Image (cartoon, rainbow, N blue to C red; front, side):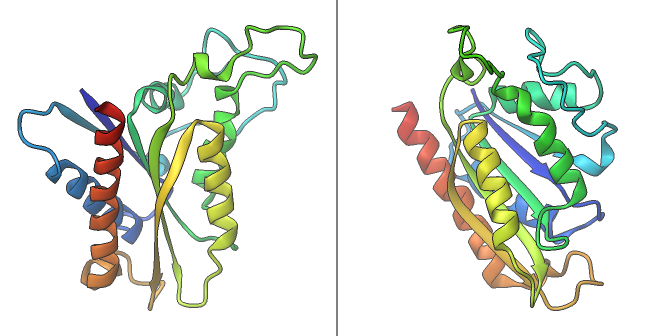
Length: 206
């Protein structure tokens, strides 16, 4: 079974972020024949209820976090997925509040061993292998995307996801949700990302 996980940090219904994630996921699925068993799990972070990271300072093992809220189910899918698509709008030169809060809460995917005294604190025990991933960023025509890219790239590294591709969409009108639907270039890039990620997954499974 191949598990594709898509996560949206956009709080807007019908957002361009969500459209691009869906197109990329659709393209990923189309790269496989019907004999392959593929599951697609999508989370829109704004529809979940969870608290920000509380900086507990110690490992929550055997759980992912000390706090059992709506992120508990996301953690499981994130740990088990074979490929990850992560999208966010650009707010103040970075990811959305929803995306940043989620990323912060994933700190415990790499359990701390501040004294270097316990050899069992092994990150790879939680994440069995590197997985390919793609980034989708949506902002205005004059937006600065590098801040958000760095945040998500650092997050990917933390959870053993390799950043294989990125789609950037600069909306001509920030007041119009879903404007990317009529942008053939951005849609094409999202479709290409999906196919690329499928190729990466297939190469790992040979």
